[in-house]
Image (cartoon, rainbow, N blue to C red; front, top):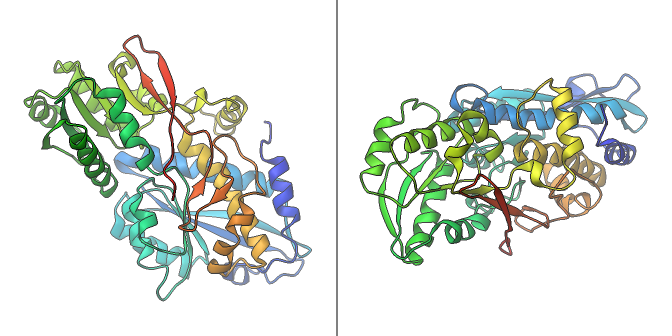
Length: 396
C-alpha cells in the first residue's frame, strides 16, 4: 500500500523532538526515557445504531493517519512513542458524549478528543473550559460551534453556511416554490433546517410544515413522507447519515415525488448511491463526491486496501485523515502535548506545515476554523450526471 502521509508524517514526527508528553504518557509508563510511551487521541461518536456508518468512517480516517504516523516512527526527545486512538460509542447522544469525554480526558489521558456531531461537540464545549481542559477536534459544519467562542475548539469541515444559498439557487427553479422539511431531527439537522427556512423565504419561496425525524431510530419513512407530500412540495430538504437518507429519498420517489432534493452535507452522494437506485438521486444538490476531486484516486485505493473494503470513500474519511497530523504538528510547535491552550495557539503555524489529500487546510481563523481553497458542491441532473460548481466560503 502506498503511504500517502509519508512525507508529511516524517516531517511532523522528526520535528517532535523535545516535546513534552501528554499526561497519559506518564500514566502509561512514558516518562520521556527510552522505554517509550503512548499518546492517546480520544474519539466519541455514534458507533452503533443508525449513525454507525458515519461514525466508523470518521474513526477509520483517524485510524489510517495514526497508523501511518506510527509506521513512520513517532520519536520525541530520543524516545519512540505510540499514538493510539481510544474510541467510545455515544450512539449520537450528546449527554453520553459528555460522559465519554470526561472518561477519555480524565481516565485515558487524552488532551485532544475528536467528536463528529454538533450536539456532542456543544456538550463537550461546556466541559473543556471548566474543571478539565482539552482540545476538541470538531467534525461538524454547524457554524454555532464557532459562534460559541470556545477557545479550545478546532472545527475541521467547511461551515454549512457556505452551502445553503448556493444549494437553494440550484433547486429553486420557480417563484413561490414550496419547500418540504424532512432533515434529521438532531441538533445539527435542526440548525440546517433553520438556516434553509430563512434563506428560502428570503428568496420568495413558501415553507411547508416541519416533518424532521430522528434518522437514527425511525426505520419506516412511509408515514412522514406521505405527510410531507400532502403539502405538494417542489423541493424537499433531507439529510442525516447517508443510509437512512437514501431510504427516505427512495420512499419519496416510490410515493410519486418527482421534484428536487436539497441534501444537507452530512449525507454523501457516493454513499447514497449504495443504498438506493442512483436514479432516485437525480435532480438533487449536495456536496461533491470525493472521487470527483482531482488527486484523490490513490488515497481512495489505499484506504480500500487497508480496510479491505469496497465501500465508498468520502470526505468524512479524508478530512479527518488529514486533520490528525495538524494536531501533532501543533504539539511539536507548542513544545507541549499536555497544554491544550498552547497546542491551539500553535495551530496557525502547524496548519502551514502539513500536506493532505484534497481541500487541504492552509490557515485557521481566530475562531478556530480550518480553512482551505477550492470548495465545490455538485448538482446531479436528470440524466444522472454530476455537475460540479464552486462554493464561495463566508469570511470569518
